[in-house]
Amino acid sequence: MPVDDLISIHNPARSAEIVGHVAPATSRGVDGAVAAAGRAAPDWARTAVSDRAAALLSAAASLEAAATTQAPLLARESGKPLADCHGEILFSAAVLRWYADAAPGLLADRHIDDAQGRLTVRQRPYGPVAALTPWNAPVVLTALKLAPALVAGNALLVKPSPLAPLAVSALLTRLAEHFPAGLLHVLHGHAPVATHLAGHPGVYKVAFTGGATAARAIGAAAAAALTPTVMELGGNDAAVLLDDAPLDDSAMDRLVLAAMSTAGQVCMAVKRIYVPRARYERFVEAFTAAAARVVRLGDPLVPGVSVGPVISAESATRLRALVDDGLRRGGRTVPLGELCPSADASAGHFVRPTALLGLDDRAPVVREEQFGPLVPVLAYDTEDEVIARAGAGELGLGASVWSSDEERAFGVARRLDAGFCFVNTHNRTGMSLRAPFGGVKRSGHGREYGAEGLLEYVQPCVTHAPAAFRGGGARMAPGAYPVPVGPPGPPSPP
Image (cartoon, rainbow, N blue to C red; front, side):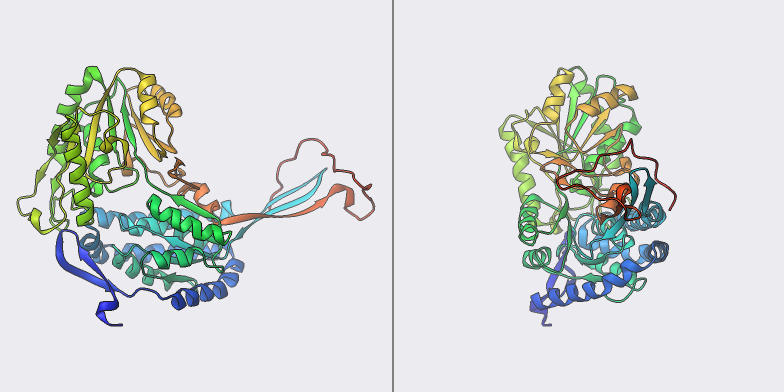
């Protein structure tokens, strides 16, 4: 394919540098991949769960072996610090291992044989599944779809973001070697490829992570084909510090990184911080001091850099406009951390990490998901007030509560309008493979991680012999309905 027809991937830290190219899929190419996945899926679904899990474990080992060589490529295309990229690949291997270990128990048939009759519930895979993944954590957000989908017995078609497709594509090529031919595919392209795949009649489930605009287009395409979706969308996560919240160095370091990791371009990053008015100035001092310890802005390949550039010039322009708007509203800015001495900020899409003070909730930088290294710090007076303010708006992905009293924190967390609430941490440091993750309201539907993440990729199918007809002797009168006989008994062993 001529170079002009390829998708070029640029380094956001040195925007003139082309990291690589990928070839966009044609409609015929998508159709062929879906057909191949459809042919491979039935045999894979009939494969024993233990064998599918063994393949996943083998793939996990392959991921671990490739982490050191692929992390620099991921850093160059995404702008994420090298250490973060290395950690992302290793964590992705852990995701594969967790689902391999959990699948035999979670996917086992459930049997009941009691006074009401005999019942078997089995978990049936969908068949070909489409996974549409973003650029900000392309490997782990693919792994969170790949691992449960494949171990459940589905085939998988992955369409990475065209902004950072190189490392994940290379890793998926390695992983495909551990599964039957035709089971795992990678398709590149822009929005038309995504919507064609999502609405394809040969695709039976769509998993998407990304923004609301793309989600609406993908959801509409899937709905036209009556295809179910699982969607993890944006968040405007609030960190709520109670009046007894710890302000020690460890807590403040975690909070800074929760807002600034991946230059703030994470759906579950801290986007707003609410602090009791009486502790506001003390908090700002502690937060700024923590940023001085942990924030180093620069090229992601330079050791010690903790915050890289944002993904594009458009993102940088939008973020600077949010800062300018905050200043016009009477707010003030506090630069956070420092620029690495070797960094050339003019070479890439660098935005200085910044706290914005003195704003109210009407400011766009507070009201909207910034998706960048900006964080407004807001004062509040009462607990009821902050719970209402934290839950305002259409998004409800994550939130966090910070307190020295864990029971109190859990009580406040129950009142927050969020799908996942952290306590005394936020973002990556608060995730757990066993904890289902997803949002409420317009932050998506369905769940990733945990048992719930696996069960998104199967459908319960039932075989039932009612007690009245076992042996074939009884008949039901016309118009009659079955009457339950006592409470259901415990499931019998498989």
